[in-house]
Length: 94
Image (tube, rainbow, N blue to C red; front, top):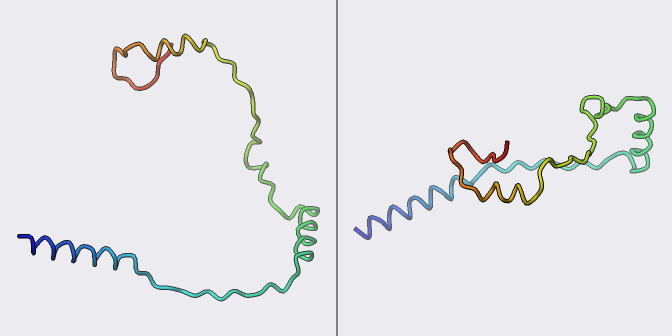
């Protein structure tokens, strides 16, 4: 019985190890034909002419607002310690 378990474990480990094998593709790295200064200059020109998409046009700007609590910390703590009467979730409050 032990030899059967050993063979099964060895086969499973070989199958698991072979599942990680993938085909390696070597993509050649092509050197840039532009300098960093040229790229930054192109970026500034694109920004000035409006060629770049403005992400704030599609997404609302994030504004951080303070939210005032309607309960005191002691009330919230006391409510969390009371047993729940029904199993409706984690919401405690009114």
